[in-house]
Length: 214
Image (cartoon, rainbow, N blue to C red; front, side):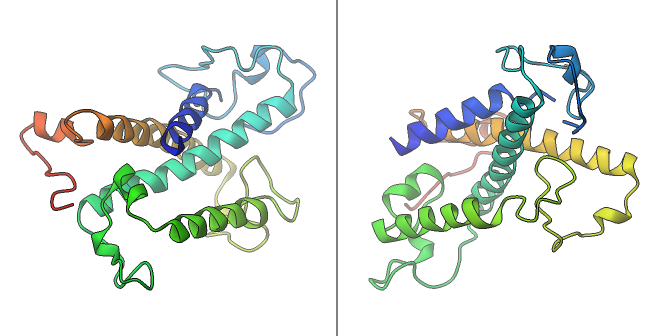
């Protein structure tokens, strides 16, 4: 059920992944009102095959953009984590008092059956805490959808020109879109009979012995 929920949520997010993002007031609720948003760019331009923005107002668009950005950010972390753990990187020590080491936990979906129930609960609660108390516009001063700086983390953002800020937001959107498709592909390939999410590597002559020893 957990695997199905993950896959369905990613599919739902990627369905609106190419629907574009710039906050500005609009009187029109037609599709043309969003055709110049950040993220509507070549080669696809404005792409909304499911009609999620048909008759949508600004609030609806901002909600979809918020979901897209959040799924994109989570997916980027997921892809990076999948690659790093496939490469053998693990935290030192044990994951529980029973002596289950991090090194004994496989990569990907297979890890769900190896992580102790208490560990899964802690992960769930931690994600819930981030969702409800951290990863949001707490101060209300966000300049755009997905701006979670909250007058605390900046990394020089205000020093960028408006053009550079727009370019970087577009880069984040596109990387997030690619990551949503990427982690979905890894999950699906992991469940195929070969259990090899990196099957493309084998096709080009660089096979990866995925989860060998687990």
